[in-house]
Amino acid sequence: MKDENKENAIPLFEGTISYEAFGNLYLNITNQCSAKCTFCIREGCDGVYGYNLRLSREPTEQEIISDLEKHDLSNYKEIVFTGFGEPTCRFDTVLHITEWLNKKGMHVRLDTNGHAALMNPGRNIIAELKEAGLGAVSVSLNAESEDIYNKICKPEYEGSYRAVLDFAKEAVKAGIKTRMTVVSQEGIDIDKCEKIANDIGATFRVR
Image 1: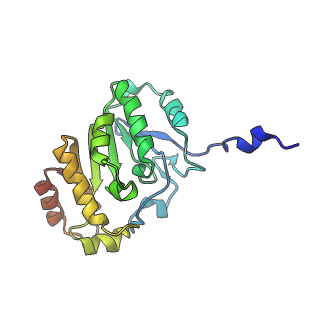
Image 2: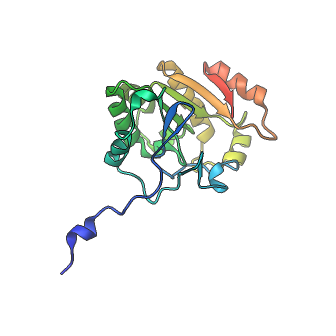
Image 3: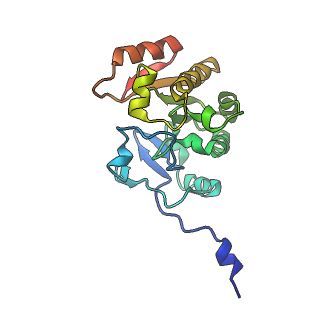
């Protein structure tokens, strides 16, 4: 006779959900991504700051909350969705955990590639993030033109560069603190990237 409990059991989880750095607590909720950036650290290592960010499977929302409850959240400046994948691949989870953190009085930031609207068609991405209580976004711009972006970021979806710009514009319009970033590398015009961010109304940072 089959053991139905064993068949339906969630596999054991291995990997790091949350990790500390720079006075913040970072959340690693997925290893999925909608791009294959040539500079991505995932190609050369298994994590950062000594933490293993390779997930054996995606943690459930309850596992994420249980992990967060192990920390004194008041010790952190902000809680940041980032990690070894694109958080908005799990958009509903980002919303639910943001709502939970917001009720705890925490400032929440999303580090994103800006592809959420392409991965979640028909959703009002920024409005939903705002309603959930998101306080800030950091959007990976990474290039001054679509051609260069496609070459170095290798996005899964057509129109990804435009989606990045639209994501940032809508976030600024919604009053979400918005930063755009680029990775410093050969062939990228940092000044042009900064102008794009400034014209949108976002701050700018070179990573």
